[in-house]
Image 1 (cartoon, rainbow, N blue to C red):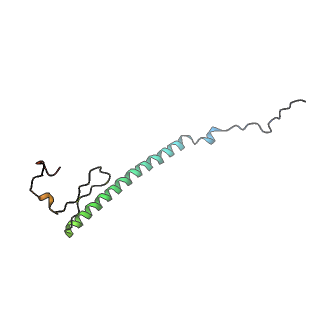
Image 2 (cartoon, rainbow, N blue to C red):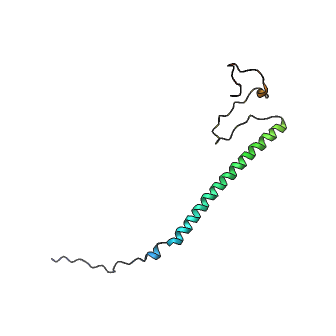
Image 3 (tube, one colour):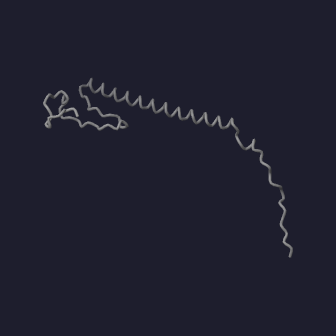
Length: 106
C-alpha cells in the first residue's frame, strides 16, 4: 500500500493586514472615546456629589426654619464619626465642664 497524502484543495489565503487591522485611525478613535467616557464619569460624580451636599444643606435649613434642627450627619464618604444625637437641643451651649476636666467638644 502506498501512503498518499491528499493535497489541499485551496492554497492558504493571504490575509491583507490593512484590511484586518483598524490602523492608527481606529486606535485614535478608540482612545478618544475612552478618554471622553472617563471625563464624563468624573463630571457626573462631581455633579451627584454637589447635588447631595445641596440636598443636605437644604434639609438642614428647612429643619432650622421649622425649629426641629436635626443633628449633623456627615456624608457617608467623609469617613468621619457620626455624632450621637443629644437629649438637649442646646447641648453645645452648655457651659458645664466635662467630667474628665477636658474639653467637652472632643
